[in-house]
Length: 130
Length: 214
Image (cartoon, rainbow over all chains, first blue to last red; front, top):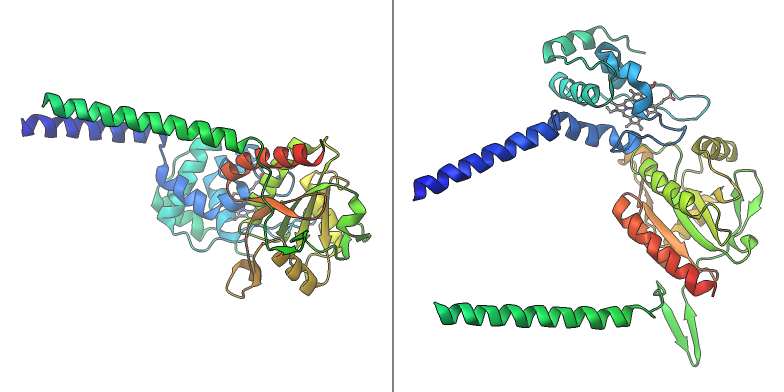
């Protein structure tokens, strides 16, 4: 009896985690997004009118991991038209950046490319700082 | 076993009956109820004095002087923010936009965003911000003023605003959106960082409009 019930439990847990994976292929990246980007770009990536761009509209950048890595690391200077800037993010390490980029790519990019942490490390080294 | 089941059924039916009754009573009581008046209420003989937000002189995005009283008798939705705020402000303004969209064509409602960053948010900066938020400044106005009076004003709206060198860009503040009636009395608020709180707030605003314009 106890064996059967533990088997059922195991199956249940297994299927639950499977469903979980299906819904959020990059759940780590999603959490990183929420804490580092969503304040400005919103949970759903919709941005704020002309002040903060919607991520849907920046599919190009989001399809190019190397550009995106440097954009996140260096931020963007004050835009003269809107007065808004994107601050540099120096907190995220290459593993977190990898998760974030894969999440953003899967959600917004026209042609999602997945990256691995060692590649991201190289990309970071190639960023021009300003 | 059998009697156990029976008493369980009894308990369940009693519980559900009482909860239905409680719901009915609450439902009846809630309907005619007016929105509460927030803040201190003083009773002076036959007079009741409610807390009101002061009608201080402010300056709008067009460099014109602005007072709440100059709006005429309007219901007001207000918040406190600053244009370079990297923390909660964009989310709060996004929710203010939801309110804007809902009451855009309702002349009884006006919206005011007060900047708490007098150093950076000049009148020009406010104007550029409003323009890029793509809202009509005759409906939703952006104001500044003397720093001390804006901080005092925030207090009167029950919004906490403090300068904190450790906070992002030097300010710590709450993201409340405040509802004020035609007589400058505070009648409700929601948390602008929480979309669900704002959805519930729609009903509060509608209720006040019904109360104020019968």
